[in-house]
Image 1 (spheres, rainbow, N blue to C red):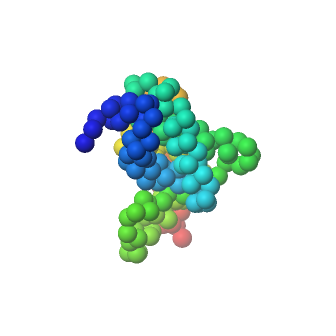
Image 2 (image 1 turned 90 degrees about the vertical axis):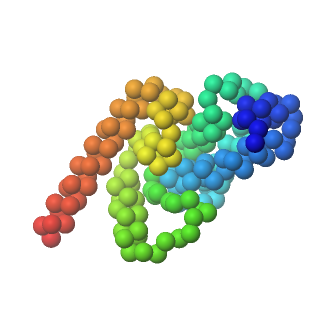
Image 3 (image 1 turned 45 degrees about the vertical axis):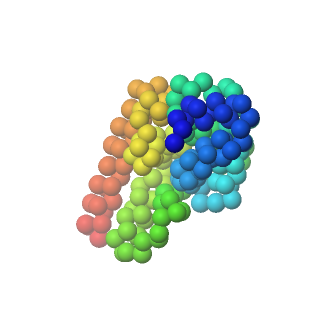
Length: 180
């Protein structure tokens, strides 16, 4: 399997099949990430499509200082934010599992997903993005800083504050449920 930098050089030289390899390697992960910001699959598909088009059209500006997926996630996140600004609505609604996974119908899984949706429902875009990128997608703070154009320290701070907020929200919910 060729090194990513070789694939990117090949794309820069006009090899569309090489870009297809980058597309295939990143499409599911980008789609799953952007699904965190909208239940509207058509809208998410549009963000993904535009992110790949921009990546292809601007591949010569990719310096190679990070992974291609880090750069692509940054483009996808900016597409989402631009649409949200244009539409003047900030919907941050759901966590979805990777669509390629089998749907698990166990009650515990349903309850966990419901709880996670509720916990993340009122987070702003930046907090939700940092949390999802770090905890779900496994990105490092260095990669998150590149994707979101923030410092590593800001990424760590946002994650810490988000975790504390989610913990407090969960505890309050548990206390409320115990009283009812």
